[in-house]
Image 1 (tube, helix red, strand yellow):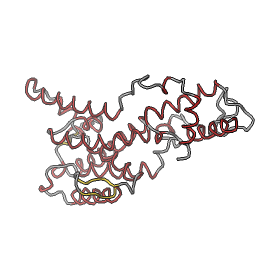
Image 2 (cartoon, rainbow, N blue to C red):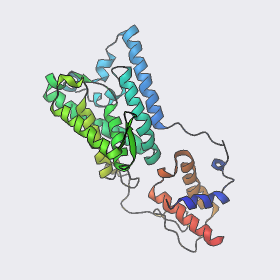
Image 3 (cartoon, one colour):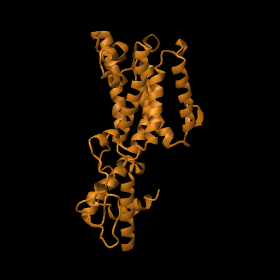
Image 4 (cartoon, rainbow, N blue to C red):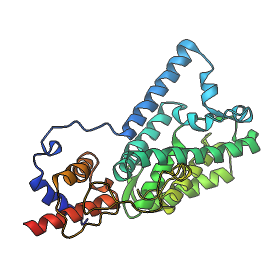
Length: 304
């Protein structure tokens, strides 16, 4: 990466910043880890309810054919926070631990949340449509975070297609190859919903996988590409704007040769970028942030 020298150069002159001191700041808890903890808490509450309270709360939160027919649209989201048993939670948790953290480190917490929500909803819509159309085959209900987790894996597989993963912790295989194997398996059991498939919501998995692929192909993994709701609420301007008060730098990181690298610019632009690297790694930087570091390094190199 070209911005690595910029980080080294800037660290030499910014070693008085808080984030450059060992142990000066606690790292924030990743959203993927918070989600994992949340799923475990929800499962614990399910178990407590089964033994002591025996309420019908789960029937309201799981995605069921009866609920969808009654217009319980929240079930398209809440079903991901319930699990059938401990092994169901364990396997989803393991996948979330590996692929969820990678997506969050690479794309940032907001894009991580977007992947989980969008792909989970896509899986829910696909599974729900089949449940309504063929209730005897795909009903009566679905629980589990597998749709969103499948989407996280798909994003990883399409961004790191040549990376090697270990299928079932044993067999080394390319991420993109494993993606297509999963698509084939989930597609087969969706088209051939035999009782031998073990009551798994394959359509939800397939919907999450395909939506995760589309997430990358549509460019939504890139920070400068607006997500659907950002377009709807006009949160992203079509034209680049000049960053107010930062002489010589605009929003795409272009710098005038004659402009100084002021303390004001460092505190407002460079400090947050280095802080982000410290918290989430260099791969979490956007193109704009990389360009700012490159320009800052170039200006400082001229002075040395």
